[in-house]
Length: 524
Ligand code: OOB
Image (cartoon, rainbow, N blue to C red; front, side, top):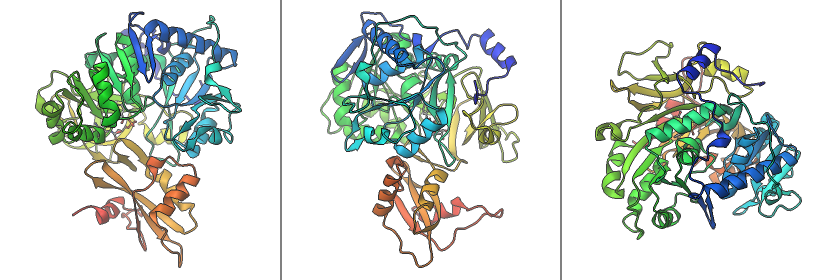
């Protein structure tokens, strides 16, 4: 597989011998009782047998279009049954979905199509005012498949044929590509093999106590690793429970679904958890079925975590994960101080953790340093990114997370900050360099530096410092947003605030000091 960095043979043998990697495939995760409900989405209510049959027909339909093993397909679908069926169909025939978020726009999607040399792009017809079909017309792919009104393109409903036998993929093949949060000018693709992702979702389902009685409400984008496989949709399928899709995490949409479907588990980012903690006082729905609220993607404050059981009537679990692999969970039987104050401990006994200083030396136990990790479900290299990989991994294959953590004697990690040049906007990741590059294209901008500003709801918001060209007039925030929209950048990456500067403060080695810049706008 070109562009894929395999695990070394010694570790591969170990992960197999110790039972982390089994010969299981992502296409075989539907393990529930055939007559039980697997998926509830809008008006769709599918049993395991029905979902299996739909996936088999869609898989045959893809094969008939010439999509098959080893192909990549960019998938950009919202939380609908079509997403689930499409995902299952592609992984069954060994075509790897490249999972874009519904919020991505031409800048991101074009790059994903190019980098992955996608055979097809599968999208919805619209998202509110935005027309995916208009965007699709300019993309470098031979085939566009549209869920809904397809216009001149292939309707997703027509990707349907009588099931046929096909050669299954190998467990060592790439099963799915996830998107990295990114610290560079362009997003990176994370290849996840069938066997590592199956381990990821099965082990997660074990730690989170999923059973056939689990009713899992999806409020985050289904294409995000957290909602998909931590344990997520796939973890539910592997243990025989029911998945319920919500279009969003808004209490107006999510609470009625919890009440109606008697949902037991939900995964959210901190801003949604904060919203729910407030919303219980005015929402009238009965959400007493909820047993577990998983919170992750960004730091969830200990004080707020402590409020969850009393206010929402369920257990809270902190999840510190990454699309690159490593997952940390607080355990269901952890004492409350660990659940509230830490971001959990590694999922797997085979996860290796190093916490290092700037010179790469391990810090003293309990000290803060950068988290490095390797293990049976953590990537060994981004896809087709040799140069970046040389910086992102140690010579012995540890992934440099860019997260600053300290470790308690129990093994639990506390996230103390970040070293990477990224803004974590309520769980949505914004690469400073990517946004800066777009800002630099604006005619009034001479130089740009993007930093995070603390925010009570979002954790951080995005502030762009601009040095203007000689005599230039400072553009208004609305104008900059409109400019970025025309450049096809996803809206969650737009700055929330603009500041101008005459010069940027520099570190002793001459790099822009983002710390100094951030301090200028931090609330005192
Ligand atoms: C999840 O995945 P990504 O790939 O969107 O982002 C990973 C990064 C981490 O490196 C860290 O910087 C941050 O997001 N992060 C957290 C956190 N969870 C993630 N920072 C502080 N506290 C936490 N609990 O965000 C993700 C993937 C799987 C499960 C959950 C989250």
